[in-house]
Length: 439
Image (cartoon, rainbow, N blue to C red; front, side, top):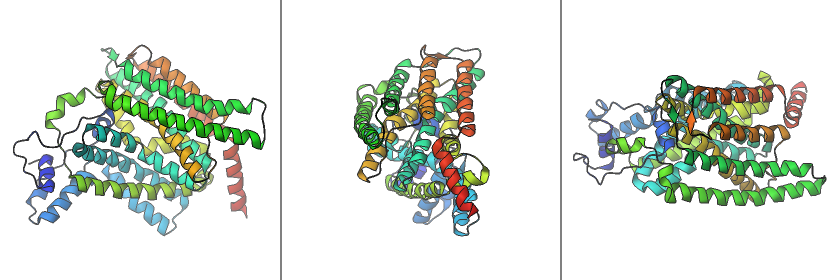
């Protein structure tokens, strides 16, 4: 009796030897990446429990909470809540909340995959695409609501840079070292599509910066940049919808993992639809709570630790928040499955660049918050050069560890830059915090 029986008990359906009518899913690279950190549930003791309701609850707890190798990090969630309630110190709240996001992000991926078993591949693909960066989206919306525009831009920029340089670089480097005797190949078609869309996102960020040097200054210039950003965001959202249609309908074969064709017969849902939906809502609420803690305490953590807010937001927050998905990409690179690793890194970066960022601009427009696409010269330059370096690294459809090493070196240089060279906004925020603490 394995985890498949858990699905049958909860759904009130007998396995019957694996009927073809059971829910199945065409897996994407994102779901496969997250699955690398999952562990098979041992339901022997749970299935001996007699009350059916209690059995369902225990099966759900086993599959959802204990079904990941990083489940010990769930302990950080109650500790963060206690630290907030008893005022242990705002830096502690920030650190514990950040750790608690790691398993939650992985479990959200698992639950959306479970729901996708019942909704079909198209709706399931949309669900995975929408919830793939739920953590970044929630943090961004909370920062937008609290008018912390700089924090919002930092966190989204950091997520893009982390995926492009750290995750992709680590995957190429580790995969190259683990497969020295083999030539690592990957499908250039999907990589080219993602790089093109990332270039489109870079263009929309570069134009507001260039407008600063066009001669127009003052309130009129700010108004023009805001209008340009809103128009560009609408175009980017249309481009994202076209990308989804391209990915899920007309050219699905470019983005489906070959891994799923080997294991499709053994894959079944292990959690019922309504249970998965309930868990998803609950975990999203917890992510929102921890994200609120992070947004509210990051300035104090910055001043206490002596680390710039830009570094915490651009470097630390994306690394910890998406550690599970990042680790999964590296594991598949070790197994010489670069298409999965590239799909995770480039797919996440593309989604943030042409969906989450313009979505925040549109939401800010609705909330009457002046959120635009303008970044500083340092931030725009880092993003532009990162996309160019990645494009050159992937241009021939093959990989070796030196390409990964170059991407990692680039990430180290950018990280050092944001640690040493504070942006004007970060300096202003730090100065205000120190003045308040002095009073």
